[in-house]
Image (tube, rainbow, N blue to C red; front, side, top):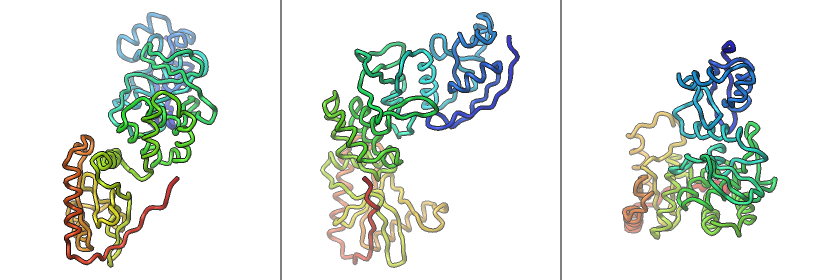
Amino acid sequence: MPAADPVDNAVSGGLSSSKILVMTLAPRLAALASAQGGVFTAAQATAVGYNNRELARLHKCGAWVRLRRGVYAERCVITDDAAARHLLQLRAALLTLKGPVAASHVTAAVMHGFALLHPDLSLVHITREGAGSSRTEADIRHHDASLPPAHLTKFDGVSTTSAARTAVDLARVTTYQAALVATESAVNKELMTLRELREVMEFCKDWPGARNAGRVVAFASPYSESAGETLGRIAFDELGVPQPKQQVLIYDRYGLIARCDYFFEGRDTVGEFDGKLKYVGENAADDPLYKEKQREDRLREAGLEVFRIGYAESLGKKPSVRRKAFAAFERAEGSSRTRSYRHVLPPPRE
């Protein structure tokens, strides 16, 4: 067997930010694996001097992990992170595919770093123009669709659909909730703009699933900072609660109180997802529950009502979301407190 050579390589960019420690590979194979994102083929191993018996022994003892037929990675590059493992499976799949392909759908979303709601990472998704038909084989979902250059980008040499195309593709094939979580995450992280999203939607407007995608694009907000905040917006919409402004700064006469997840303009009401008021003044790191209660008290003293919603009730669009919101609206309307707060909306983002 060729002599082992420890190599310390980092796979950067959208594919992985963790270190790959190559511990059992000969130098030439280590270099190949590093260039390929940590994976290599049996043919590449034999080309640098390993024989079939050595391949079988390294696999049997667990030093090498077989990712798919004829493709391996060292055990030390396999992590507990589901997204990282999925991207390793993508790298393995790319070694077996011929012709130009692009990572797409949920696989591209993982590469870009979208927040994903309960994603199915069991299949690697790729899109190939002119493939003839869409199909699933050997744990790869092949999509046949047009890929104009404007809809493509690259991470570490791997071709993938752009953030906007990825969002539209996801919205065409997954649930409204999951698609909106992914889309709002991507816009909030400035991976794409709403304008870019609308341009891709226009291109794909006659494609299967475009109706659901159109709903997502029309409703998407750039201000949701978590999946929970997106789910709250969906719950409000479907339960008949007015849509709030987001990430609004609230001031009283002493200064900044908080940045709120939801502000119901004209209703003197603040809504918070999971009860977490985001303090953005001094000593932000020193933020125990006592200070959160103090901030909530300050909001009420300034003439605002506050209600809180959680993940489960938002995901399930429970009636409790509506009850909490309208109870707060009624309290605010019947309150005799002086409205002494000032609010500042976030800058528009298109």
